[in-house]
Image (cartoon, rainbow, N blue to C red; front, side, top):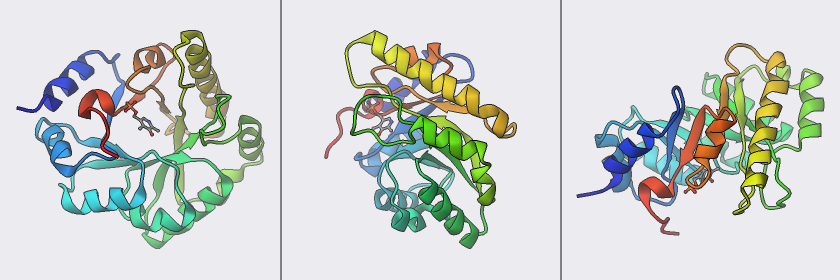
Length: 220
Ligand SMILES: *Cc1c(COP(=O)(O)O)cnc(C)c1O
């Protein structure tokens, strides 16, 4: 029998009150997602739009799909009709494009602002100074078909816990600084992965995104 239901149960028991578990199923086959689904889990995260669309089409329709990977403007159309939350909104150009696709579908799409807080070049996300300036100008008011729900980010990939802590602290501070510009729906701080989610919760994470602890190593 699969360990997936057991791992989900154990993870949930380790989460602070009110923290949501997003099961990151990228690169894992539909059968594994179904094992989690049959254990009652409904929120899954994917990083590639075409893979997300294919899984949406083949799996039960009450799954909430979260887009957590870098999104190119020409691929929004694959997920716009059904995506529950786009966590990787990282530029004005992308905001404009999501807004257009959402309008075409007659939907409002919920999004998180992905913020880049590490020194690593490879990680995507807004630079804080640019995002802050854009928000202060009321930039998102031009995009009525997206609703900004909060902030998403990643900590540095390192064994040095002090660096991870300061990254999460920064993300939490960014979320607090942005909150006055958005309404009550700005309630999400998505941070923490398999190796660092316990630390992330100390800094106020409301959603942890966990892949390998649930599904094992990814099959690229
Ligand atoms: C892959 C991924 C995760 C999950 O990582 P694990 O280490 O497998 O838990 C979380 N967030 C994002 C943005 C990812 O790309």
